[in-house]
Length: 171
Image 1 (cartoon, rainbow, N blue to C red):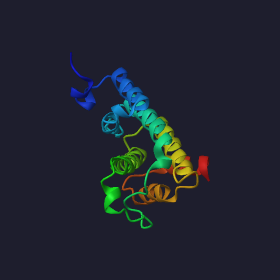
Image 2 (cartoon, rainbow, N blue to C red):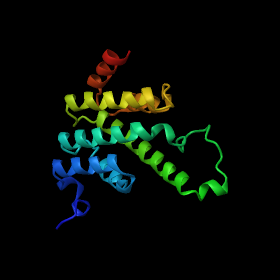
Image 3 (tube, helix red, strand yellow):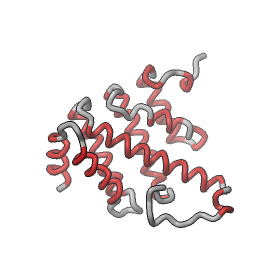
Image 4 (cartoon, rainbow, N blue to C red):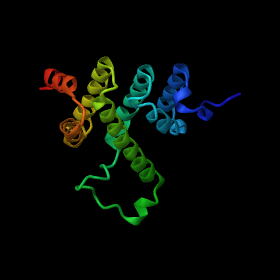
């Protein structure tokens, strides 16, 4: 029997992808599904695969985001002493934070890509803005919002649809 994990991410069936997401949401024992699901958040992935991964990852990160340490890029980050660095829970949460930061970057990539369908772009933007709303302990998460705005402004390709959608839905 071929393992789901042994298959290349791009050749995975939608049903198998859904199973990965359900496993991730059901138990910490399936945390290794997280990087696999992140692999499908890409402008080159089929839209149904992006959507299925997005839904699973959004559900997962919504439940754990409040418990994660500040981003590594945060200037306000508290200093972690040596004993805390050895704590498996601290290491786990730090790893989860890095995966959330990667997730945010991938969502922005999908949003500004000219290859992304407009319907998918709208869903991804809604998910992204949910994290902006919830991501900082329930208050506005300005750093990821700032990343999105910088990406829009610095995009080499036109992002008119995304700008209009952002203005229409969130301004």
